[in-house]
Image (cartoon, rainbow, N blue to C red; front, side):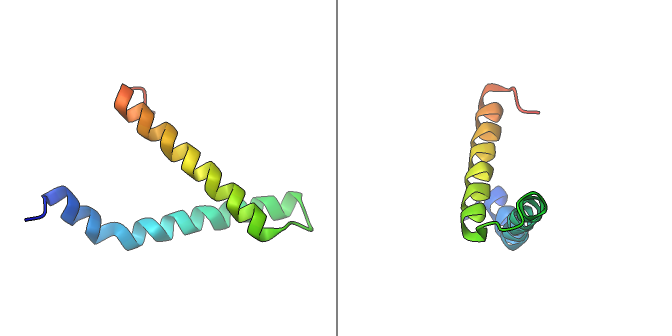
Length: 68
């Protein structure tokens, strides 16, 4: 049987994916304001890489008790 935490996460998985997509859109918009002829696929890759790094930082902070 699935644990309650997993069931709760499963119920919100689509919203989580939508929130991450919205973050990419948000930062792509910021990029395009600053760089008019932006390479959008490259910008998306850079943004996703930064989000992954931020997730790693949050995860490490939770492990060490230093998360904000």
